[in-house]
Image 1 (tube, rainbow, N blue to C red):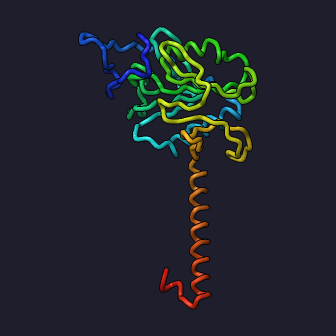
Image 2: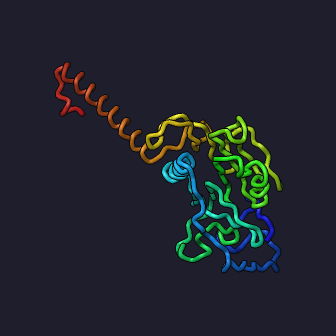
Image 3: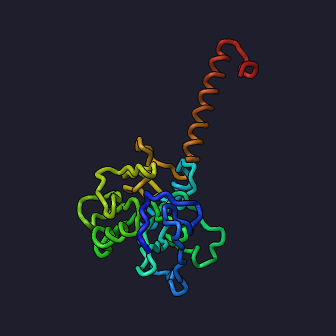
Length: 251
């Protein structure tokens, strides 16, 4: 199967690829012997919390009219004859979780079923043997993933903590910045507390570097806003009383 570029405009049907010749006929690959899950990933605490932070903030705060899918440790199958990739995180726009995910073809990210590669794949480096800047860099490009992100919090691969690559043609170019224009999201290193742990976390952000909030952060923000409004209302009521005005008759 030929590699699909993320720039290709694809019909909503997961099996119909646009811009194919009229006589093009999709041949569904045989996945009967494909292993979609084998329970092998063993993540460290940093990676596990980081994965959850990045996915939950997308579902709580990503402002988009497009359906999307954000996953953790799900197989990315992009060719019938090539072993799957297993990114720490995938973000794919214009797709959604299949209704019947009990079916084998719906339990992993098969490019030929979803109709397109993901826009973003993120690898979180935990050791020096993952080859994130070597063979994986080439594999994700061949898979047609629009942006490949390498987050190296422990500096296993050098002093650079965050690298973002954009697919141009058949290979990646180091962006030199962390804004993914084709997605409408950026990435930033944020020092703060998540689930009780203070750390330099990788966070999604907008083009002004405002971070996407978790559900708890949004709730806390609303709580603080309500408290501020109450304080203003109480102060106004106090001023009215000082002037001999009943605030209940005015407010």
